Length: 453
Image 1 (cartoon, rainbow, N blue to C red):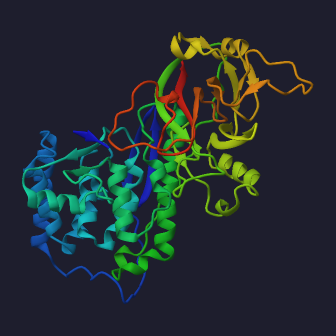
Image 2 (spheres, rainbow, N blue to C red; image 1 turned 90 degrees about the vertical axis):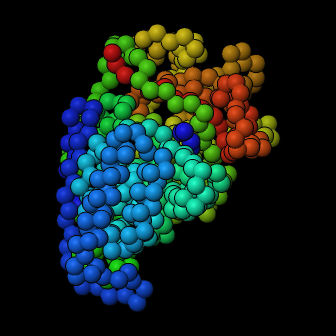
Image 3 (cartoon, helix red, strand yellow; image 1 turned 180 degrees about the horizontal axis):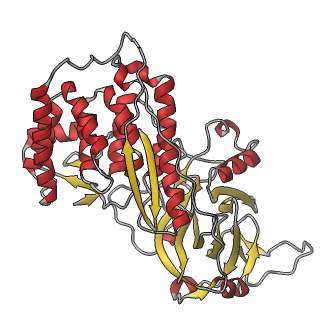
């Protein structure tokens, strides 16, 4: 049940990405005291066993037997082959096509279980193929206690949150945790976990693919500079990830064409850049791709002093929203700020009862807003200060946002959250954007991506 590189050429054919990966590994003489043993000169028996077990695994997955005990035992058998199986498994991962989403889950699971750093180059290359549309991360169980313990010990749930089952994650989660286990590094790979490939314009598709390529390039740069010292076999000493081919020109939104809803995201929250939690992974949000992010480590120690620099850096990284805060009558109020693009506060009925409407009409019905996504008071009180009482910083509302990459979207501004007294496993009732409790403090919001009809 659901729970929780080589030289690369990526071609955009409409909205469907095609990924073709070939290996480009350059020899480099290396040595290290703490390295993995080199491949044996000849291991035809191991290669044959890997091939037979992968064929069996493929058949079980094609017949929807993933999660059954025979399937789990096959993964266990592959892991038990040990380091001698890594060359064949690495090549099998390189040869796995983008469309085979199940094998892109299973082979990284096996390589993580074996724990041999020679798998790192193939895993880096496979990061690019992780971009795509997948189902859920899967949670499985078994009545066999020994099999359960083995699968739990090697799955992608590195914190062992579920004592009664084991995980089989989407490709991005299997690959990123395999890299994390084998290297102790992360390189913000978790930012890719919420990026799916089934929605959006050609420009959005391109921007999403670009994030996966950039992430793989970060990994490749580190491996080539220092990570390769973890292995002694020069065949695994270098990995190259090519740039994404040039994308399409920045689209211009026709304001007179009706906009329909393309995708919906709810129950989201941005932490304030000034009061982030320990992992600070939910401060920034990219409307175009669905990417979440945190503040660059260079600026974390003094976010108040670095606020302007942080916003400029975040905008250059492609993020559209940042969590922030203001002081209102002696109270801290969490807010959202727009880093780039344009926004208009529009009538809320477009959220509850939306019919395709042109951007031009929505703009005329609304009011342009500046950087802060804050609703206007319906009945501001007279005040000597002309700006006083014009805005309700705690109020909820709806905004039309057009990003700098031309993506139109509704941003529903929810309430702020100060209460983090949430319990795992307790279902949330009612309107997500009006729930005063969350696992983090910040401002709630929801997104509806729009497209021209």
